[in-house]
Length: 463
Ligand code: ARG
Image (tube, rainbow, N blue to C red; front, side):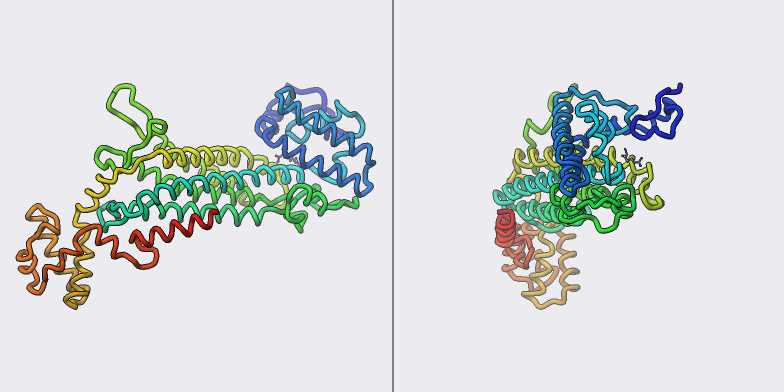
């Protein structure tokens, strides 16, 4: 199973080519062909710089740059024949360039190595994914703001332990996710700013003796500056790990929201109706409308976080600088990025299309003694009871209502006074859910005024 010819790119000292198994484990072309556009962009910038610094001739650089565009169009048109014997995208592109333009192609790899090349390509690719994640999140935030605005004062139960806790507003609940996804945006932005340094020209690991201009290539490729340490630049995959970390946190937020949508769309809750466009039917139970998109979004974090753990595990313990282990970085990030973008798009579609059931939200808000805290607060304010005593009195009233099978507002004043004689009829004002939410005027609280102020702040920020 020996391939007779040695590798055309690095085979100078090899008498025979690799075993087929060696080729199979070594080749990355099956997946790194996704970096073709970035590879060609990086090479074109490198060639222009080599000419500008007098390292290669202008005519060679022009032939290289032109030839690379031909390679790109062949790849884009599906005419390119990828070869596993040529291992990876870098050597596939360079080899084809040689077919097309001959001798000058061999000058392209002056003053660089595949180590800085792959770091550059992968950074450029990942940088686009940072931007795509930010765009996707902003679209989702807009969809949530629309929902929040429509129901800024609709009451619903707020939960702790998934037990009814206190009434809140639908708008407030939607805005909680706006805050989470807003933090995700800022996390992706922070990491993007940190990663935007060019590895190109750090060469194999030590830099190069050629008089290159790394600032020029950095600028041409949209980097803020060249990376300052050549060893670090070829060994660093933080930019991918940070992407996966940001993606995992975002996927966790998506998963929590998806879980709520699954619960809320059930017949038992009926808080929301999902659109036909984002639901599926059952092949056996005709009445069913399943929240499959929400369930799948809930699950996608498994892949995204799996990719993060996988790449951390690949990177841990690697000595400086490049090791072939690092070829295992790409598939994880590709899959996580694809998964995240799909999940964001599906969530945005679901949120834009869903209808909140105002009546069901309101009915649920009033059940489960949700205004018990308002009652306790009233006892503190009106009767000057210490909060602990007020809590105790309220507990006794809840127990009474429970034994009578009614809610707190259904108790009579006599019932109330049998627990605490000083209670007056004014208490009934605080037992309504609308009053309850209206009273929560503390900054960031659930009062519709507060919610509307937050909506306005976010709309302003998004522009
Ligand atoms: N295909 C390789 C990767 O993805 C490119 C870098 C190879 N460098 C090397 N020194 N063998 O990591």
